Length: 210
Length: 83
Image (cartoon, rainbow over all chains, first blue to last red; front, side):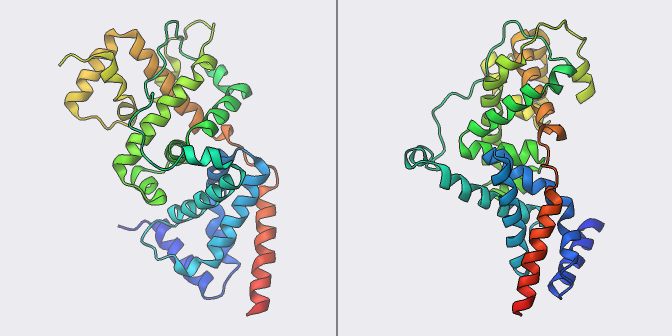
């Protein structure tokens, strides 16, 4: 069943294609953030991400007639954004780094979490810390590309598994495997910054999240 | 079904996404009740996801939308001039 939003979008697309180009802004407005954050999370450079987001929207406008409506419009945009981010990433990467990430699925590797011995649940004020956010962004950026892509779409953009699979051209099982590994790698990378001396606050965060 | 820690770790992601079937979920939860190590891993992973999902973690640059529209307007203008 199509939602009202999808129907409205399809109508907007038809009108843009028929020449009402000014409606393109209305079409993309709900996804401006999605496109920017997708690229930023991959590249971690504001200027590059902004330029990439602009290129993505230009490409979307130019190729709008090739959008068939089989995927959601947002998924289609994310696919373009992801390709734009990959293109820019390749430009900045050295050849040596490229050969390390040849698209093969690692079966080896350490995907176990960090074991904590003196864990305290992080208080909400710690989550607000700018520093911690920067550490998170940095940790996301250093994940191997295939894990980072899945993490960005699933946990930052909150696409569902099917949408993520469609945007990346991989199957749902692989989405799950890569997401799990990405999360475990992040847990390991971030644990030193998540520790806190603050007294335990009775599981406030957990209740709030559920 | 008694689970070892290592086995529980493999299901942390599935647990957070509420994807475990009833039997596995029960076994994981039983383990978590008595294992501080695994509870801490679960909490820390969940906290990372909370932080990640926070809109303020990834802020848009000031004027992003305006500049995007300006660039699109210039491009659309050009396209229409050519046609």
